[in-house]
Length: 269
Image 1 (cartoon, rainbow, N blue to C red):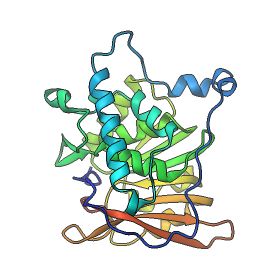
Image 2: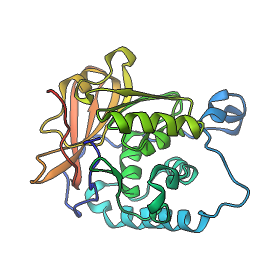
Image 3: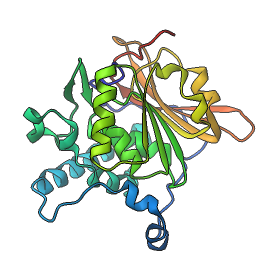
Image 4: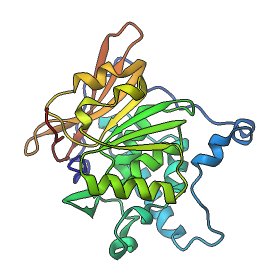
C-alpha cells in the first residue's frame, strides 16, 4: 500500500526531551508459553536445517549496529530481546518477491510491487520496540504491505488488526499470513486514517506511512496508557518518527525519535 516506503532512518538527530521512558516489554515465562494456545498460534514454522540462518544472523547484527549508532537520537541503546527474538523467528524471505528472496535479510527496504516496499529491518525493530508490547496486548497496524510487520507483532501479542488500502496487497498479505500459520492476525481492506473502531481500543498502534499530522481517530482508539508510533511530515520534507502516549487521564505526550522517509498516508481524509 502507499503506507510502505523507503523508510530508512534519515540519520541521527537529537530528539526532544522525553518525559517518560518507553514501557518495558514483559517477558513470557516458559510456563505461560506452555500453558496457552497463543504461543503455538504465534509461532512461525521452523525448519531443521535453515538455509537462511547465516543471512538472518547478519540481519540481526546489522539491526544491533544501527541501533547503537542512532542511540543518541532515539534513546534506545539496544532493541528488547523479545523483539529481536520475534524478528529472528519471522521468515522474512517469505514476504518479498521470489526473484529478490536472496536479498530479504539485507538491512534495507525492498520493493514488493505496487510502488511499495517491505520496511527496513532496523525500522521494524525500532518501531516495534517503542510500542512496549506485552503478550495480552491488542495492536493495530496501519499499512499492512507485505504483512511482515504484522507477523513480527503477532509473535509478541494476543491479537493484531492490520489495515491495507491497496486491494492486491491486502489480499496477498492475508493469504501469506494464513499460509505461514499466523492465526492471530486479521487483515482489513480500508483507509487506515480512521483506524478500526469496532476492534478497539488498542494497547498500541503503529503507522507505516507519513501523515501530515497525528490522526485524531487513532489517538481516540488508544486505550489508557496506549502508545502510537507514527512518522509525521510531508513526503519531500523532513519527516519525524513520533512516539505518542495516551495517559490514564486522557492527556497525550509526544516524543520525537529520529528523521525517517516514508510515502504519504493515503485515503479520503
